Image (cartoon, rainbow, N blue to C red):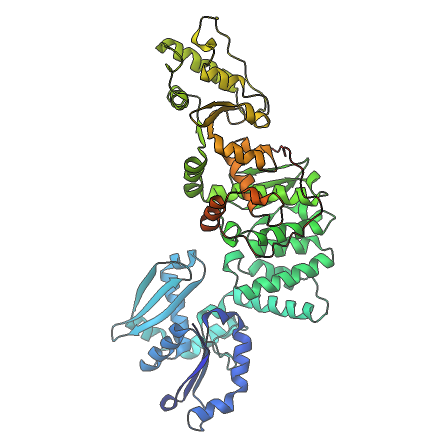
Length: 532
């Protein structure tokens, strides 16, 4: 637990206001507060002017100041030396939220510790002392360079109470601008959403998970203001900053300001790690037609025809987000779908077909089948699957009446015949064996199997499209579970809900979607399947 406190050293006439690490965003305000308390701080060190009055965030920064004092080094120069460290070790900048602190000073070297928030690794870096001493022989040159190159963030300005290299980042100045804009709007005053300052702020702000919570709240304030002003371009910019997801230009030119607002609210209603930092969710496109699709490159597509139907719009978008989550967490989700629901898929080759038939009981389960006949049947199954990317089957196998294919209970034949056009609509009639159901998926050109218990769940869900494939099954479960007010949500078994809570994320309380009188009618929401 971090509590604010003052650290005073009368012998060195220094006072440090120590604040929680998460409050660095407020360094300007905190510095102004400390300046106003100059007289009280002087009393802490014996009623004489303080020689060093600083704001620090966390014990790391406090210890760093003490180490610098022990070595009789100017803390402002220490921060400039950190720039040399970064120049020599550029990989440190490849990960956001870098922390770099002075840990020790010896006669031969200065030691620094580098780490990143929310990352397990840390690094110890040394810089030879002779380089440091040579660097510090020209203090006035350094001061002039910093002041001229970064006049608004200069470490040498007397009013700068937080002396840290991070304040020289454009991200911190951008968050200052963000906070000022939000305060202006909250006070009922107007801001120019098309100004160069606003655009520059959006370009320089950190994105999504790198944003502190206070900045996320300020972005929400500005987003509501942009929506009220019907400024789609500003909504677009603010959304991309808040969630780190690109919106194509079609959303900004769309006439209804509620559309981006719907996306904003939905992204906030799912577990935060499903969206922020999900490398498999990069962009949301608005396209012609209806339904939606997910490209495994990380692009969600939403059909324009969905927009007037608010509930359908939300359901389709949430479903496609489910695909992005499965793509991002495939190592967790896919084994679970297999172990819990029996989902397996088999490609159109002899070895895979043998495995698929083996789950039914094996080639000879219905009587002897020669090796040549197995090859004939396998080739026929490949033809029946078709080329893929279609809703209808390929050519149906044709064999003489005496061929094993035409035996009364021959599983591969029954599974093929009972996989109708739009096969997911007829999942109740799929061939059953050993507690599983077998079917042909014509879109993916694969043979699939799923447990009968999974299909019993599909029968209770809003859409039979959940039977289309393991991808759509998970996306439909995701869409339903994270739609907190859907009346059919209780059909999800308790053990499934527990698994989702643990591995995908707990639903966000107070889901912003309001209840409606008639949410959904049971049926099929046919949409283009996810691209493989």
